[in-house]
Amino acid sequence: MSGPPARRAAAAARAAAIEAALADAYPDAACELDFAGPFELLVATILSAQCTDARVNTVTPALFARFPDARALAAAAPDEIEALIRSTGFFHNKAKSLLGMARAVVERHGGEVPAAMDALTRLPGVGRKTANVVLGTAFGIATGIVVDTHVARLARRLGLTAEDDPERIERDLTALFPASSWVALGHRLILHGRRVCHARTPACDGCWLAPLCPRTGV
Image (cartoon, rainbow, N blue to C red):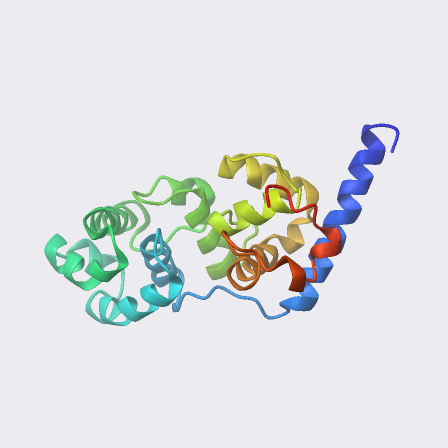
């Protein structure tokens, strides 16, 4: 590799090989939050902050039975929301975010979750990561790649980025991978992070990405 074009070509080829390996390993990877429709996914994703999807899935059935849509949630008492979501942690802040989000959805969007990045990220408690989850998984719209702690960790270890900021990591990833792969790639990286490339003790010896991985920071 004698110059930037050669380096870019090599990076693109390695990214394509990583994408193919992940697709072979996790052909059916999907969001592990239980939901029916954009509203439920938005609520569940807000609840998943610093909490496992499995824990969120134990909480949302009762929450959605009590508050099945944005209008119902917008009219809820904060203490009732807190009681239902307490086990997800940070329940005061999450209840405030859920209530603010629901009221904004009702007031600005007639009770329907908007299918646009700008509109979603203007909702209380909704950042770019949450918006990407909802757009990609509920609406099938690939506006970017979900960058959670797993994706950020794997992107650095795989040498796909040198950044720490989620938005800069996302920028680097979207430059390497085609938009048609963004939604599935996010799911697959998350699943690989949960099953193999753990934060403290990555299972490098049994990892099929090992031939493609420089193990940056490991």
